Length: 245
Image 1 (cartoon, rainbow, N blue to C red):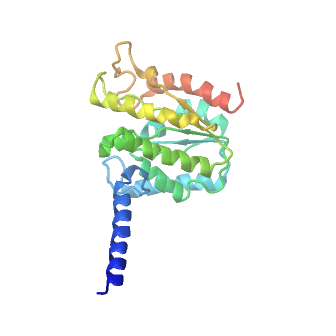
Image 2: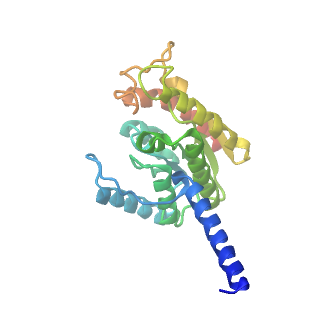
Image 3: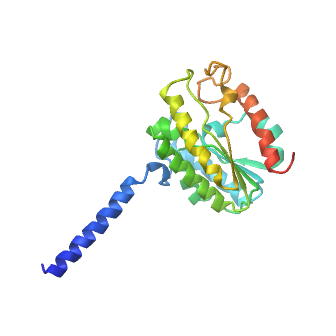
């Protein structure tokens, strides 16, 4: 091998190594991937079916408000949704179990279509911790990427970015600290004039910081009582952002 060939080979190896390191350094939370994990309560095929239903709604292009999230957003009590969000022509694109990377994949595969909403209401990130033990920084990166995609996909929409809700019965646990650290980072995303950040976590907490089973049966997902408290905090923000008082 000549000197010139050696230099070229070393240069290519260095460049290749650099990009390999860059790819490895990129957190999973920002890498769009479809659902691959089977759950007892939802198969992979079931996940694709729900995504297909969302795409069908997106193709109609009639939604004024788009909700993005995981099971906590997907699980809105039916009557509360019908009474409060349905009249605003809202659609719910949340799917239980989704990580930010799953939500990013769905954005790339049909969740936009003909939609031109006035408002996006989003909450994401808790599953990155629950399933992958993602750090606050990595979770933040995933939500930030998702927010960027939403702003690009829906150029005429304002975004209500919600903090990750507290979970776990007791306060002062590693899980609660993760929530606090993650939300502290998420709050910085409201520096965009199209983005507003709201932390409704206190709605679900007792005075001593504990979560009651009467509000979240599993200390993670709100039940009907929990959603009744949440709607009182969220709905005025939604209506105000839409210019409805």
